[in-house]
Image (cartoon, rainbow, N blue to C red; front, top):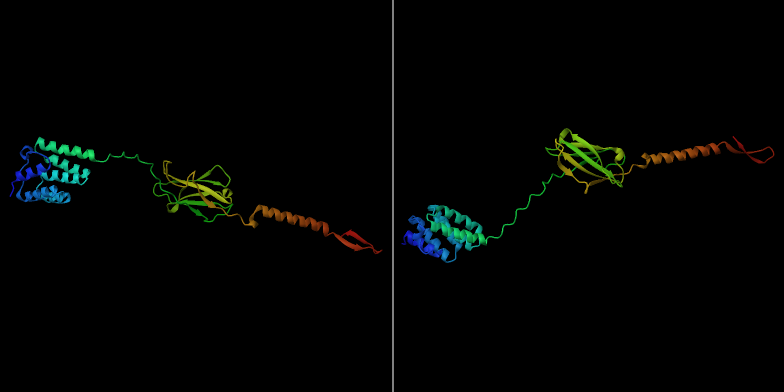
Length: 274
């Protein structure tokens, strides 16, 4: 059976090192030698995964720079330079001579050159705020009726702002609301501002310091809700029109009712006020 130095020499020859005694390799146990010999044979036969497996078995028996170095070489030959460098650095901590450490550093530098360039870490983007989903009451609002806006803001929201505009308006108006029962933030859009055919709006939840912590919709991309028109019998124009018709009827009646046809004594028709 080959001695520990002979096994180390065979390994180091494989790794392009001339003399094992110059590396200060320490003797290893008989059980570890078995795995080291098998790892060297596998490495020479380009069976790198098998070499890694044998090195791991040997490492379980005895920590040794030769095992770690050969593991680094096997990983590098398989194109895994990032893992190889980790093995080389571990071997460096166990190296006992300047020559051994020099050999290991050469391999670390070689592997570092083979690694793909690291992409710069992108700057962190803006923190995404929770998206609010307002609940509207009534769900199908009609013009002239107040519109209640409820949102569940989470733990941080303490105040609600609702910005709204009707169709044709270029500027948003706003109302505010507070935290109410059930943990909901509520604000009310006045009925005078709820007009057909639709209302555009967006909401913001603010914390106690007044900073925005969540939002639903935005100035550039508002939410919207369709607004139904008032029933015709509820419109002022309807009652105005009805009033006009009634007035006209009264006038007509005032004119026509007193006027009746009568026959005179001489038989001629005449129009007399009644």
